[in-house]
Image 1 (cartoon, rainbow, N blue to C red):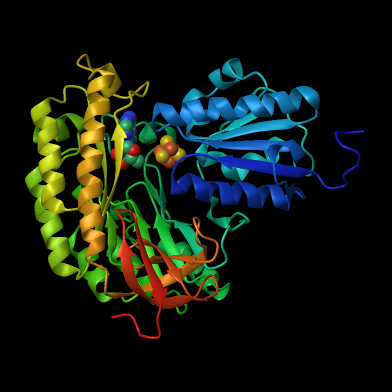
Image 2 (image 1 turned 180 degrees about the vertical axis):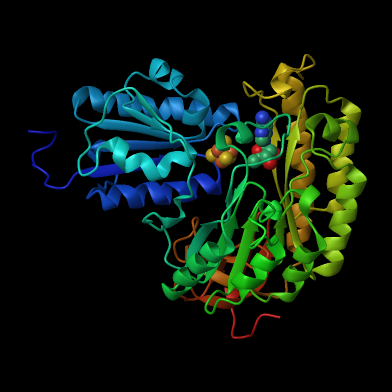
Length: 451
Ligand code: 5AD
Ligand code: SF4
């Protein structure tokens, strides 16, 4: 008998996801695929016959988190050797066969482009696997046509491209997710239409660089991202369209115009700055300088009323001096972001920047991060305070995380709102804003229509 007192007819899986929204979306496909093999979802690893990790390797921290998590799976497998451990995602792709040396308990490993083959590697219908296999498909494939297990009935991610053609000196993504390939527009719009028919109201278009989408397509279907936004906007039932992430170097006028003209496209852009120093931007191979970035911000704000801007910033890139760092602080003051993700530079094996000599000491990086976070939070709090007294359209997501009696949702500008009143998840409701912090708004449902 297997663990526990009950013989279970149904085999169960458990998926742990690390990393970005693209990975979270890949996990929906992994789950859908396991379900199509007849497995059910387990509430915990301990209940699972197949334990899956969908990993990230963008910085050292997710690598370490994975190491901590897999230790638990190893212990479970020692008790029940029939347990299958599968490791997918970017860390698996970066390590390849080395993964089996580091973690001998792993049965199967697969990269982000190989999800469509997972069923065959797990042994269709059963879960017998050849040990120590790294599943590499000859051709990467979109997971778009696979069965999907969606976490929310009214929100969905839609993949528009895979891979990335940029060569940012710090970033591991191009080497683990490969060259950029755009999904065909017809396929994307068909998926959005199907989702809308199923009750989805908000879609987030995903790509490593959404704004270069379409350039690699065959001439007969070649198009650009603005056209895709317009096509998705025309789908009946879709009330909100988001996308992530654009690269500042590829943000062209037709996309700005589409954002301004399409009712469903939300007034929010996540526009990674990375650094405010021209010298560092150059060393990072970002291909824009601070002045060009700021001009783009000006154009976006002029073209799209009430736009919210978010960003990613790295501190402590090799060679970053105090002056370079101050230039980043200045750029943040100038743009006044509504939100920002801030990171300590983390050398990644195989990237250009990891080979540079002048790595910044950890204490210096830590200190810069703290100073940056102070500025980011102060500005975000000021920006959010400006919303107090207004009415925002909120898409209800569920109960508030901090107070079960309240509801939580997000504004079109992508700010989380905790509010009083009743509404069902998936509903769009007007909320009067009464309070603000650097990351959230507070309010109450009102009868007024959002301005
Ligand atoms: N170190 C720190 N941050 C990184 N990012 C990407 N690579 C690294 C790295 N090696 C950040 C960038 C990117 C975000 C997803 O992660 O800011 O936009
Ligand atoms: Fe996402 Fe990058 Fe992490 Fe891969 S390495 S999961 S692309 S953040």
